[in-house]
Image (cartoon, rainbow, N blue to C red):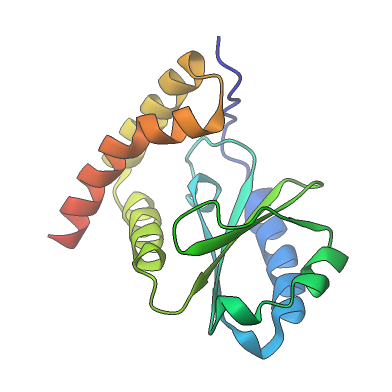
Length: 160
């Protein structure tokens, strides 16, 4: 069995997001243009790794107030994804993804989330895939890469 743990949907994930989003808004101040809950924990009914993914859109990555984020117990993980910054928080498990305004990954992430929220058969197929992949993958990166064909297929449908 893999080391990836997938749990049933938990409605408390939305509350955890709201509480953390407020702290992030305060830490980023006027630099923060918008903030979103994305990833599987943002899709009601979808099983997920119990990690809250938060996407913050900022005017400029070069102006990030990293000291304020560190005060909020975030660990600076640098540019883990192309053209974005990634921070993680230890307890509860929060993943903060910060993108500069206009980054195409913002739309892609939100489009995928919104599609799964409104297309039950695709959400169910994704849930099955996630559970199958969690049994065979031992690290998060290989697990994420294994989901990419499914995600690309959904994005192609969503973009019509």
